[in-house]
Image (cartoon, rainbow, N blue to C red; front, side):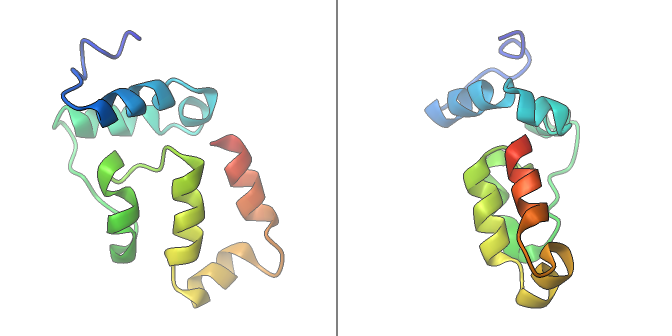
Length: 99
């Protein structure tokens, strides 16, 4: 938990994120450093799509949990989903396995 000194938890949810962020998925997916920079105020919080703000707001625009990935898949407009997911859900399953 070497990230505690850099990201001093203020709420219980901060502890939840600290535990989740040290899992292999967020580290391999390169989501740890963007979250930490945003938490420290060194990077602006941005969202890939305006409809994803409610899904990613608590994690500062960085998907850290599988539940977020599922909500993203349900939230993104249908036309964009089809171009990403194609007919089957294989790409979504592959990404979910990494989180």
